[in-house]
Image 1 (cartoon, rainbow, N blue to C red):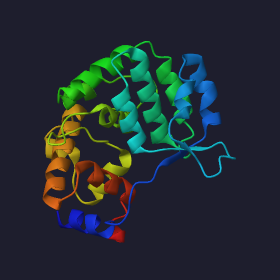
Image 2: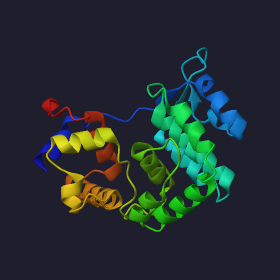
Image 3: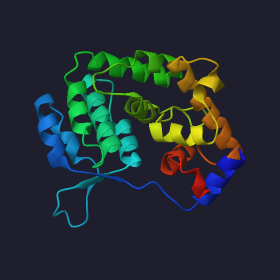
Image 4: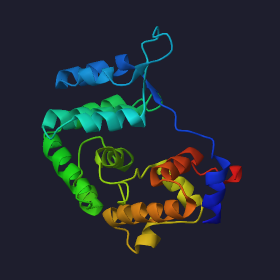
Length: 222
């Protein structure tokens, strides 16, 4: 806990920035699946001459609050999540997103995992998610994006490799904390632990998650 306190204090003035992405890189991967319009999400960068756009976590919340339960709406939010998670640094993001869009399981997977998350059953959401090209770091971004429950709940968080790197550097292990190597249980344990720590530290759990992501295991900075 002392290390987490130092983390919160060290980066107390830092804020999560919007993610830059290039619509041109994504368009050919999305348009055949009817999702090209998602590239209009966010705002243009600078004077707009580059064609790049910025997408923020707030944009995902805004999109989530406007969609309904139909498969196309859920697909659009999923694509936005993949764009936000990839930015310009993950060159495989467009390819992996196209693979997921081509997976016939997508409508069912997005609907069932969204329901599980909103029901508070994060283990089941983790267990059910299976789409081509989408690993834990990205499908837990989906969980966080669709979780619209009250802030008092242990809402879904992102289980990113960079977050795990920081927690491991602090000596925390998800499998040891959960008492099992079963990933769905480890994810649920991570979420509940993060909410407990955040409450003690006076920050939100998603704020603490981002600080751990930002640190990326560089504990020497503390």
